[in-house]
Image 1: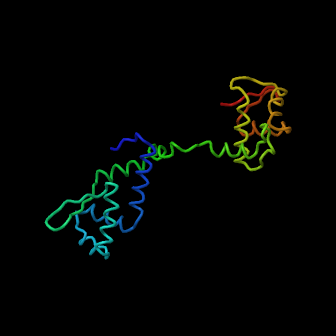
Image 2: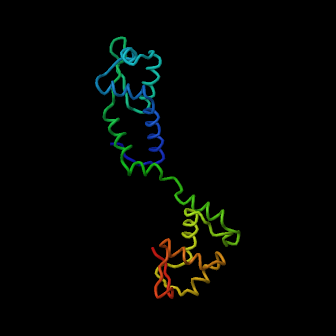
Image 3: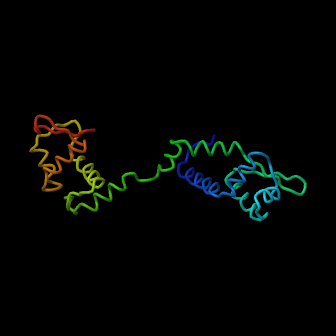
Length: 194
């Protein structure tokens, strides 16, 4: 099996495999070669395509290692590299491998953009967003102002929240409502949820 040592290189390789297989004629060629090795002329006759078209498809499949050729007399006989196909399919269907493809993606990009869009240069919020996903992003940003494991009085919570927006009651209520903070004693004590 192919090791996943370079997520960027592997993602490019997987994209190339997807591209190679993202054509109905190439899928038919793979299906035919899975049954038996064939020449270009045999494949052309079976698929009703011209030999140069088959050669083009075979070159795409060869580039990603799914097909190989060996010379037999005047002809090249193409065969499916079943081990390579199995390895690629295992990688494509492995959730860990697919997740590794996105390893270089900034997962916090949306949150950073929302915070930037809704913040003034001094860090205060222009407004509290009404849209749920944007509000969640803002609340995750705001809750970082609270130390995990510490308990805060409502007055302390309001002081911290006032650095972000004057409507501390809404921020406080939403932080609790979204499960980012907890409160007890009728709102006497608040703490950040990890």
